[in-house]
Image (cartoon, rainbow, N blue to C red; front, top):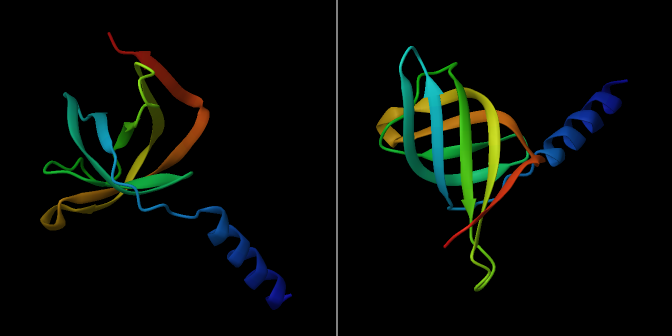
Length: 114
């Protein structure tokens, strides 16, 4: 039984592989006042991200993040993938915070740049 639990944990941790990606990010939260800030991802996984920013939202806050992906050469399109989740870690002195949520295909948008 114990080996089964170890296997489950190993499979779960593999399911949340983090990718070291530095991509522009815009994030929004409301704590009675609507906030919009910007930063960069430090790493990204299907279930969240670590965001570097000079302004961090409070721990436990519901948040929406838009990560901007590089557009294919000369396509004129900007790709954004969205994550809706909550702030699970804040390290203001390091200028970063962690978000647990879900990135999926339903939150992929394409904007045509003129």
